[in-house]
Image 1 (cartoon, rainbow, N blue to C red):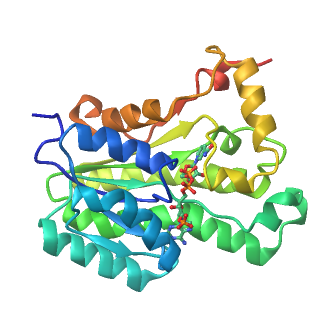
Image 2 (cartoon, rainbow, N blue to C red):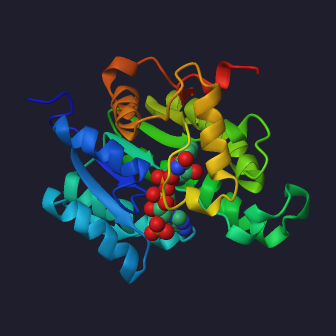
Length: 257
Ligand code: NAP
């Protein structure tokens, strides 16, 4: 019996089998978790996610655009109805219009800034608020960040500012939800991975190659390592860990060179 047997989770942010959320899903399924999933409300997103998760026979697989409160309300009502509660939530979602990421941060538009912040940072507030009533016995929430939220990464631009907001959102949510409901909220700050999202970052290859050259462990992070870190943060082994930004980056972030 796996360490997540009897635990119910919701995974938001699978695009395909390279998604960080999929690596976390594989780790959780191997440990016996029962999972529900979302996809963006488009036929292509639904097809991509269904292909992966149908074999897991999820009780809930629903469209959810995190910019839409009605999608979030419908999703969490369905999860409550199907499972009767929730033990953990994975938020692995970000978006900025590609043209905004190609510009220097100084040039980003008001519209692009609001859109990127809404999807990449505010959405964690919205889904955590909706999940909390289902976590009646405490619970755990994990989101995914990047070191570009702490330091300037040329080319990461607007998304770096979104990640800074996301990381401080984790801390404030950890306070609110810890005090009121015993729910823990943490982020994994992941090393660079080639995914659909990262393809929108023009300097991605340079960031990844630089990280391999500079890190304590001179290699890329394996997606499985993000999966197992997710297991840790969502499990009772991390029962006293909350408001934390855990770097899973082969030690890149501690090197000053
Ligand atoms: P990914 O596979 O493209 O996942 C991003 C997900 O966000 C996709 O499933 C996407 O849906 C979803 N999404 C975008 N807009 C949405 C919206 N309005 N409502 C709901 N879902 C929405 O890429 P990933 O690299 O795994 O990214 C997951 C998280 O990890 C992101 O927060 C990213 O910033 C972070 N991260 C990535 C890296 C990296 O190097 N890849 C490093 C550090 C942190 P569709 O695909 O259907 O559009």
